[in-house]
Image (cartoon, rainbow, N blue to C red; front, side, top):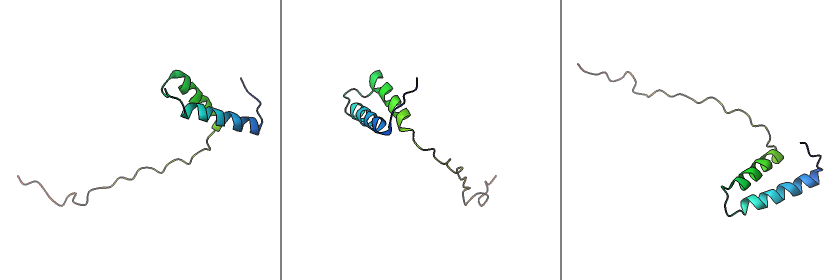
Length: 69
């Protein structure tokens, strides 16, 4: 189902859903979780850049000390 909302209607709906979810006493209830999911769809966060690959650091003492036999 697709809703054709104006920008003003979308803003009001986001504001109301935010007030309901952040003011909820039982924030882990299925009702609040579903409202948060709807709110996430309405906000449509901008696409983020992928994070750079993690760096792998070798220890500075690698190969310096050898085990004695």
